[in-house]
Structure formats: C-alpha cells, structure tokens
Amino acid sequence: MLRLVVILAALIQIAPLPPAYPRVGATKILDNPRVQVWNIAWLKGQPSPLHRHVYDLVGVYYEPGDRMIISPEGNKRPVSTKAGDIAFQRKGVTHIEEGISDSPLRAVFIEMKDDGPTGRTAAPSEEAPPMSGIGGKQLLDNDRVTVWAYAWGLGMDGPRHRHDRDTVVVWIQDRTPHAVWVPAGTVHSEEQTGVISEATIFELK
Image (tube, rainbow, N blue to C red):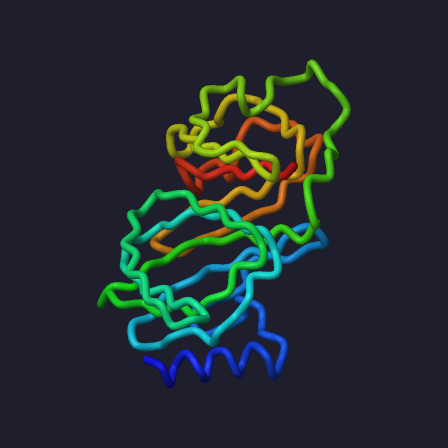
C-alpha cells in the first residue's frame, strides 16, 4: 500500500493528469460546444488511469454494478450503484476507478463544457408548456442542470411541450444508449416518437 501511495504522489507531481475520458470502456456518443456525452462501462479488472475530472458532469446509470474508487492517497472505497440512479459531480475530482462486478456498471455521463451556469434561456413563449408542465418527474435540480424522467406510450405522441434551455435527451434501446441535442426554443410533441417510450431529459443551465 505504501508503495502505491508513493507512486500516485509521484505521478501527480511529475506530469499533468489525463482527463477522465476517453479511456477503455468509454465511448463518445455526442459532442458539441456545450457538452460531451459518454457511454461508459466500468470493466472488471481494468482500472482507469489516475485522472482528474475537468468538467462538471451529470448522468444516468442504465445497468447496475459495482466499482472500486481509489483516491490519490491509495484509499479504496467500494461503491454499488442501481440502474436509474442519477449522478452529479463537480469538476476537480481526482481518482482511479475499476469495475469489480462480473456484469459491468454502465452509465451515460454528460460533461458540461461551460465553467458554470450560463443563464441562457429561450424567449418566453405561450406556444406550449415547458417540461415542468407535462407530468415529467424531476430527478435533480441544481445550479447546473435540471433532470427529468419522461415517459409516454411507445409509438404515441407525447404531450406538446417546449424546451426553454439547451437539452440533452438520453434513452436506452436494446441495451444501447442514445443521446440527442435539443436546442433551447424547440417546441415539439415527441422525443423520438415510435422509437422509445421513456427518456431522461437533462436541461442545462
């Protein structure tokens, strides 16, 4: 253990740490000026490099699993996570992560490139109600993001609504995650109608 601590300390002092992604088990599925979106699996026996998270991030776990989080000092913390849990983390976290369950924990994480909330919203509109007015379940709300669970019948139009903020819509189809970018000001009556029946909506602030 002492040897591991010495090695980790030396690495921190000698060279800048890599960002959390890309890495083994992580695939980028969306990238634009405001976000990077990653499909992540914490693979058993394949620890990440010691890394630093350079962006605030938010996401949803879509398959359950276990991982070990190792601090720069070598302290180990096992974590078990359920499918459907929402993640939010501020930038600057530094650690190693390793999957420890046979069936890997899987998630979609959204890295927010802005240093903080932008305050940008679409112009007020009476054309349709916002997400908060169509029966979605709010899962998280803070200074960076509001997260909603949104469900409707497969193949049916959802309620007509507007997106007041830039939004990432995430859904899982046949165990494969998908993400789309919905610009602020968009008004529509579906989120991928006919393809999915539920999604997680991330409204950026």
